[in-house]
Image (tube, rainbow, N blue to C red; front, side, top):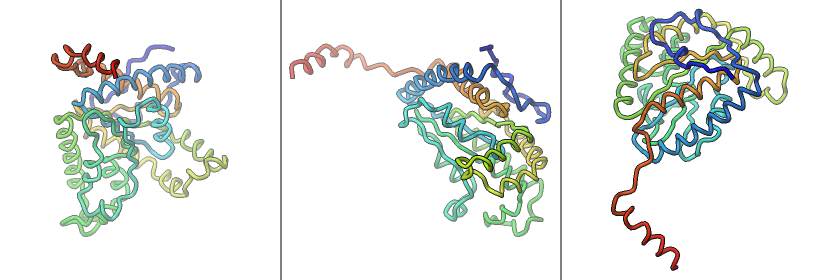
Length: 291
């Protein structure tokens, strides 16, 4: 399979989403899947080391429109991880308990502990995406000085972007490594995937008429995604725009991005035993053998 430089998907300056490809096929599907299998085994071993090291947590953020492939991405990329070292959080409509706190609260409490991975399937960015497309949802947060939709101006969204940047800056400075992936799906491919959900009985459960309502707002969502990416792509919390029309290639690119970046941290290694314990290993071995 041809080599790829994952840095080409990293956002390093202001972008226009329309300039980004939604489809890339790295190779024959079977070959891509074989390469992914090799790569995720390496990731699994690296995760074990990170767990033993115990200094960094890893936050994987997956954003994308309906049918972009977030669920299958999680299933296929992280299949070889030790379950004790990874937690997946799928953020739905906020509960009454969550609405009684600030909008970042439910994300704070889901952050990875040191040595573990947390995957956010939809993320804190929903608070500047779906709520920006549907500002009436903000009213449910019962915020001071926000009584009607008319009170939600551009200054409100700029403030949220600042809060999100501060949130990510704080957690990155305290040991959380952040990866943010936007699964860049084309409108035509979304149509095919929605039709499959309707036509295939085993996929019917995934379909919701609400998906069609949101699809009518496609252009608005693209503008909001582009703005969110441009306002929050930072050195310590970078965005990667991943072509999502071809699922096997998208999964491989995400896995390689995570692996390549984590390998840059040469301090992530299994801790050594203390000199005292190492000096007495033969005694411990003898004790066990003489039981």
